[in-house]
Image 1 (tube, rainbow, N blue to C red):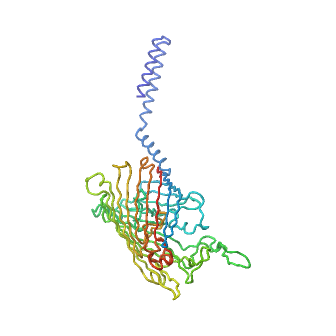
Image 2 (cartoon, rainbow, N blue to C red):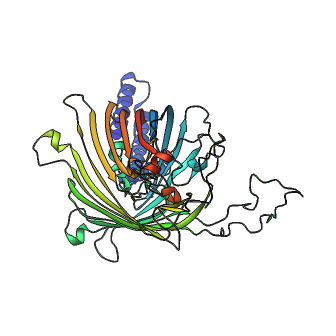
Image 3 (cartoon, helix red, strand yellow):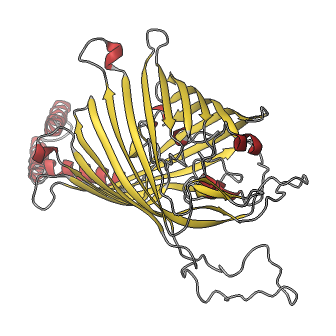
Length: 523
């Protein structure tokens, strides 16, 4: 096209020049010859340009520029929770709390087989929170991003890299390897109520923040079984390393009357006496997943688990009202634990029976836990002082205990009644010695999946502007049969029957409920 424009322009100039008689014929012929030579040079230069190569260079530059930028996502939720607790004596406590939760997602793929992902979290109640200084277990590493924090810090919830391999040891087994702060909350089954894609763990038994690694192997190509894969998972929940200036303890007076030997920072990050690393290792095995029906299994072991060990002493006054209401204790490691779960999931029921059934999810899951105390420790029990001497409550010293849990649920569209809405109904039951790793479950009244008793939940999610702006109304009701549902291990996990003389005497928590309404923006 450019060639035709240049030639046409030359012809036009020549025609006008001849017509106007403004130059002699010899002069015009000389000018035309000069123009012809210039056009020939332009054609020659243009022929040397490789347009395809130039286009490829432009594409590579665009891809490079795009790849050098971290891709950000925004997930901002404003919620109002009405929380209620009822105690065995009949008294109750109620509170309403506004909160903001912000997730800033990060993604970066420098090559086709490696990617970095991260998630920054801000979770805060409206206004200044009261309560004890230091916020206690609110900042415990397993739950720090799932509890509203007093100062509203922006924290790292996830940060890991993921490597993709096409084959493993020459076999047609695609695989992945990942290290970092893993996506270990809101896993499969629990993700439905959270209205988001499932993350790494099986949500029935694990919903806890962890640092660690994972290795996944897709086996369907070599076995011929749809969706089969095996995933090895490892994590560390607590390190035994001292922090910097560990010998300078807060709350102590330094002086001649109250001397304290200080290391001066010469021995930092050494082992803490009496503590070992709290580690977890296990696997996820999916024997079948055709995209509609699937089976998911998991099993793990956790080492050196911590809990509150109460002093073998009479009860003391902890709230200053002049009445004994608590016991002194220390935070110690008491033993190991085994856990396992198997879940059956249907993402669509039947084959083309109706649009409603095609878009219905239903699941049933069974989980199991078993403690392995070290020495004479009580992992899920305590020694209660009485007039006749100490009384064993729950597991005896050194005694192992097994617990079980059932989790069933279904969710389905309500488009016929309300376009863009979805209703979910869930139920779970935990036995006397049930212990899950669901400490980070985002239910302000307590983890419903950890309930020793029965828990019921119903939720309704509505798309306001597609998936960009959504709202949810959720009601969770927990009927406790035994205490210690939301405790760690040791004496704090002792199961005391709520409906018993001791339960009445201790005025145990009987019921808990949480009514939540939120509006959520995602981009």
